[in-house]
Length: 194
Image (cartoon, rainbow, N blue to C red; front, side, top):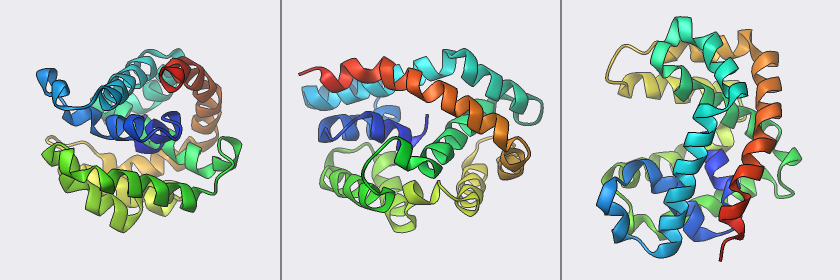
């Protein structure tokens, strides 16, 4: 899953939110540089990624994209699923999406000093362009995938991912709707752990 899903699965716990954001940028012993609460968020981030990668419904989404996008298919599905989460936000949260994203940015900005360099560099762009809110729009998806294509180390064709989303829209949305409740259930222990 991509950023928005990681955040909503964190509940209103700032440590889980920050840990989920920095999760990809913290390797090995670097985890010891964080409080126990943020470490729990990093572990939660990894559990979300692992569960998502192995889920049979997610595999179906990736298989449809594999012929064109190869090993980038999983990354693309993560962003697609954030699109469907944002688009159907009211099914998962009582808070309006713009208000929610503002609160997330506030939490992240307050912890910017402790973030790995990559996340520290990304955060101002995320906030300025309001990535989390714009996941809800196809135009937002175009900007996200164009940026990802520019940063990819190899030829990714991710600039074509919005068109693939439109072409398979109903199938991808159905698969997200089947999958996300399983992920919510899988991560409940992290939100309830004290």
